[in-house]
Length: 448
Ligand code: PLZ
Image (cartoon, rainbow, N blue to C red):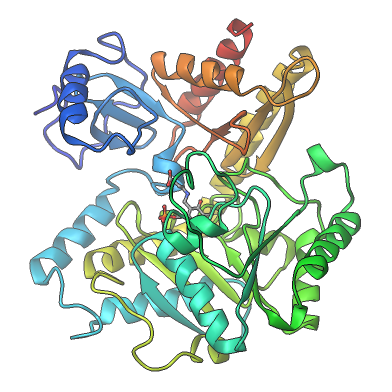
């Protein structure tokens, strides 16, 4: 089905919100009916419209409606959608070869991506990288590597954590509904502990860390712990930013006990938070770091990067996968990584926060349902609460639905589903960003 907009996918679309039909329009409704008859119902979508094209800060749907993109495909198209340089790099690679399998006939692009990641990730120590396809696969492999390197099996994860949907990673994920519901039995040797959630726990970094360590000690022999896996800012769990000093304290504790610190930067990486990686803000240097999402401008790629001696601890042939480090994805990643670790992109993410945060703070001054405003850079959220200060998921859902009907793509998150999150592409024009946040603030005012 062709859209009514530019047939040239590379063209930058008019950067404006423009609704030609009600949402969803007739073509989206027709596709929804076909979808219901063909796609498994367990696969859900946030938006009621089907995408046709996208660039900058807009997604154009199949009815020609132009929507403001405050989701970036869940923090993936940080560099913008269908970025022209990515399109030409991927096209050029596709014309040379689309696949040989790195574990069969290796190619330079994979090596270049590994070199780039070793260079831009936190820490100046000697590193090695292995590439995969999805975020969950990266987390799985980080755990495999940590177990092989330490000879230990236990893995510590946090309340509100999200690490993926495979059996191991959904076991590491905290939220039962919908991620784990009906999908057990779960992987063993996973121990869940409280982290730092200043808005809810009111604890200082030191107090929260004491609580974390105490919870680990109560559950498992520390000599059996291979790794602590942590999102430096929790994503799906609610954009929870730990108290300053918590992460560095955790890193110190891990180092003291021979436990590997794995930073899951799948959502926070590549300029999203205003630093190349969220760990950079506190000078935390993890032993292993997982990346995906923003790494390749929308092409599937993920990575585990870490200390040479840790990454090289597995047997030869122990890591891999048919599509792991796909050449098209590597071509895209080479464009993306350089750009998303450049000063101008980090500056852009910080400028997005400087624009959005004061708007939200002004709204919060007159609206008690904004319980908390948090996040960093272009990863910002509001936690919606009721009159008692308790999570109000129904209100958050209603606010998001209103935004969707008004042509703004936005997502919710949080263990209680009461957090509205903003993850715009860094290429969104400021006026469009402001308009999107105004729609959020209007929706807030309209939801009783
Ligand atoms: N680790 C920190 O945020 C993916 C999930 C979307 P995959 N988050 C979006 C959904 O509904 O499944 C994520 C993450 C963190 C790991 C993952 C998993 O990455 O590429 O989705 O496997």
